[in-house]
Length: 79
Image (cartoon, rainbow, N blue to C red; front, side):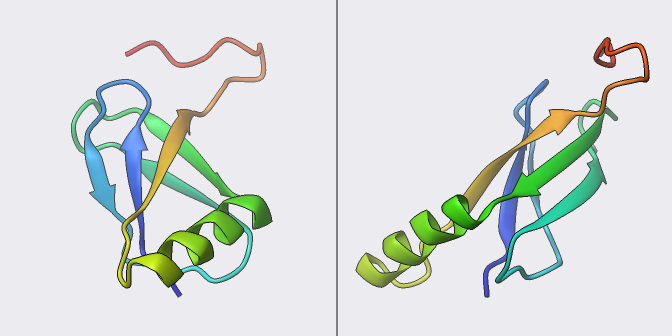
């Protein structure tokens, strides 16, 4: 299991998730830097890459980008 470090797509603020992940999932967070609403999708491919990195370097950080949540109009939040 890994605790992902989410990078805000707007301000590049780093957020260590308190939730540990070991299977694909979707997380929603609010950036503490710019207050953007972010969605984080962790796919099986990203988990495979993390397993590989972790096997070569125990405790390798799990970085993933949080993308802005879009409104029903399809226009991303402005921040």
